[in-house]
Length: 339
Image 1 (cartoon, rainbow, N blue to C red):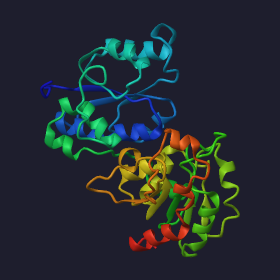
Image 2: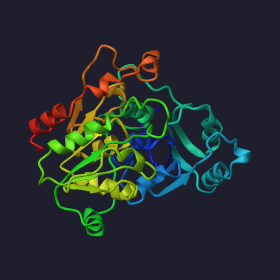
Image 3: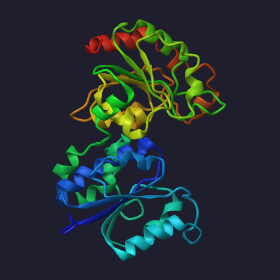
Image 4: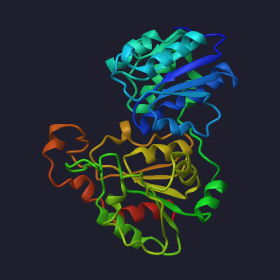
């Protein structure tokens, strides 16, 4: 597909987890650089992740898609998306979803040009990270020099507004101990032990404020990290996505495992110290761009990465995470002049 001309309206489909949607934001600035600042960009996302764009003026509209597997005739949301595209056809549709449940919707959307899964043949031979895989999906419609520099970027509330509301200091670290697997009964292979988080906090300078973040419903995970010392500000379950973006954007650094907040920090160019064991850092870890600083803290064990393999299923002690010590994290923070 040659580079298009006169693209004024674009629709992007991405209905995965929060981190998946952050990956897809690399297309926003690329489209604006290629087709002009006035291009109208709409997204199809899940209702929860759509809040990522609440304060992003680059995104015109978000269509919510909750029940993704429903056929079109049973899905009012899919029919509304198709109806809207018929009323105002798009010049370009980019599909990042590979599941067959998205095929009929992707085919039914009214757009002059379509690229991405189902419509083009992305060249995945020289890419590994999920962001670069996403970029290959829209590579046919973006000039190579623009594509090369494309990376995720997001926007949240103004920090001054959030600071005033939550009475926050100017400088602080952010700790994000939880991840999306906390509620599952089996071993959480991506998690760092709560005792390690507790011990890390004890090692940090006592005058450096530490903000603890986590989603609503994750509060139980944090109970064994408590009681917190006086420097800790507990915001677990107390912030919206846009407020969390503002807080991470202002932070001196984020300390985190392989989860959505790591991708948020990567897209904000906030220094990241990411503790990784079972997952492949070069594929799903925070994206390393020309503008950000990503520090991967890992043991590089022979059995890692093992995510979603038989090795992981048989793993009982999770040494790739449990043997990362709080002292190792502190050393990394000190070497980077964060503390």
